[in-house]
Image (cartoon, rainbow, N blue to C red; front, side, top):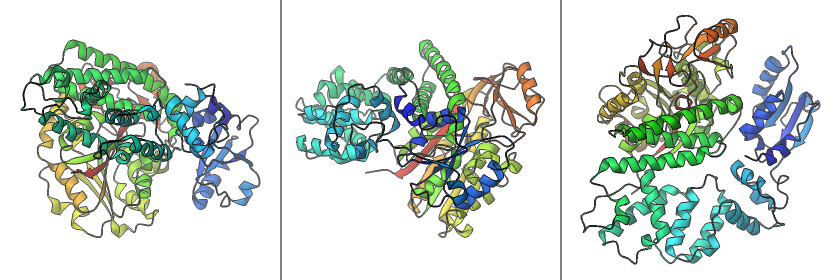
Length: 632
């Protein structure tokens, strides 16, 4: 990845550093994990400024009390620095950074809206012309960066294809560009059924239309005049079916040509699944060809987990199983290196699409502004299990999927407590070995957003037995505005499975047949809640390498981690056992972590377990999903 634009930003922060630097950053350039990581390597501590009192407490207790020198970079959450304490402001160096200075030849209002991936792509272009108008800049971006030649579209098929290609981009397209694109395409569209503005803004609307139109297309005999017969569009549709964005349907009509069979429920389900897995493999390999960033890892674990889940339904061909294991090894090695370089930067980042880390879940949901909010924490749920649950529920519910990062070590008492406290683990050091304080922390967290405790509920140990609506306080009390609900059935199944992930898949299938989760979600939506599903950590299928008896374990079921209260003891154990030392990022003092290597666990040698505590991508990146009622 070309880091030219990042280098320009970092040029503002050259040694010798001021003790305190105050940065005005209206375009949130300091929300990039690579820049933050580079600053941390230079010895610069980046601290966000949002609340005067909170900042003053941190400044006096953490900064002024340090016996060693620390270069402090203060990053206000808004452009207004008037709330910065005067004694700090007067002793600081003031710096302002913006996207417009990075690409001065392009329209500043447009560049301001671009995501970091687009800035990366722009850094690779050596011949950016002098195009100062908004429309000229937008035209340049669509053609040179996004490769969407919108002005050459001249048929309904090409309009649909361009909409599909727009949503397959790895870039986040800003609203100003989407609006421009929809205006141009609406002038070219001759089919009044196509709601192009909705198609461009919401991929689910587009996929829903394509699904219904595919059924109509086949029921009407696959008329040769239909736009779906366009060769390029047909190839794109085939890809959507193989990746699971569109679902094959039953066909009662005459025998169809082979070119359309990708969208029809096959007689050979096994072969269909194999083709789907191979399509997922192809997409994973394309992603691994370039440097993967934080958002890329979330996309990648979604693809990998889908392929893995499909495989559980197969009498797996050896080549598929071996390819999956090979990709898993590559992913884990790449992810481990990325974590070492960038994990320390994540806690200070914000993202309008998802909470970057679990301690930001409450803040993110609060900012969505809904009057009633329900956050379901499915303890131990990885993306692998989420894919299985989603496939069972998607006929009756809609999902807006994203991901977030758990705290390492990926233990319930460490990472789940971050969700309910809204704080990093270092702040709840006295209770880091227990979840007993979560209800108190949950109410205190939402009190900071102005919600009185009487309007807040915390409920745990859900998901077992028969679903009873009357026993859910969030549903029985109309005064509740914020609900935190812990469904821990997945974690219980994790620690009792004897056949690895495949065995878990079967157990979860049985649980889903009780319709406990389906009923809970539907009742919460009917009660007017905005509903979110997330997890405190995922899980990893591993093979035992032998137990470690020494050390203090914060969670007796965390079989992929050991915790020590002495760095010396931890390092001594690291020399004796196959393991990795983890830097104490965001953790309390005297909390030293030793994690098992990928695919290994500190249990009886040769024993297959599904556990957590380590740094595997399947443990660290967990689902963050908005649940909605199914669109008709």
